[in-house]
Length: 269
Image (cartoon, rainbow, N blue to C red; front, side, top):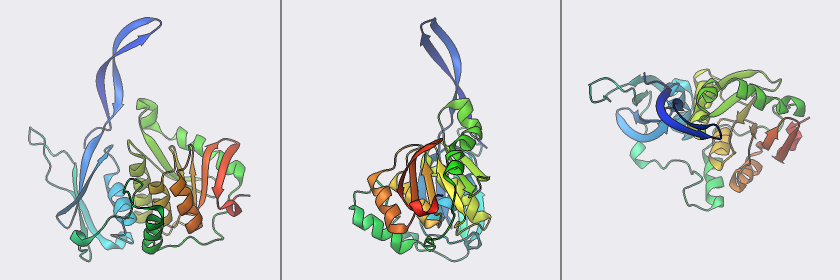
């Protein structure tokens, strides 16, 4: 398996002068996702937890609805110049065939469609609507979750270049944490974990991300039935619209005792 960090030479300039030294960087490599031998997509990711990533991606795209839909997941052809497996091609075998050539992926924030079309598409595809009365959480508990998330970011500590996503219970217990150079991949990894652990629909869990809350991240939360999405940075306007349409509690700028509650305040006590 490829390493998740790499060393590169760098020149550091500071008031103390010029220092040449190696730096630790997050690895970014392509992962080709195949379904039943057919290439579906390629995503740039940090290696590690690839099977979680693919389960989460396929679930978010409504290709699978549970772990039972997957027969196997295995690395396949993909070699470097010396003939070694790069572990950058993952093939998923499904229990029932899916006509991938006729699929359209769910709308992302960069698709160019209008907001109304994007909201309608997510609402149409989600298998697990969010119940109105789920996952009450105390605001002081919620405020402490980013600190827990940060404490678990071992790769960020080494590189400073990775996003994180964590799933928590309403009492603040961390149940899954994943890191990746792409924030959407980090979310796919934790949702993929939940799929494989049969924790979907995740009506009792809270999703916390170390980044902004884009439409794409809100979409993934809604698809998984997660009732609360909290971000340390800002949400986008379309993410707020989707949260309001889907009864998702959306919190931004979550930093200790301060936070902005954009939708779903009824879940916060």
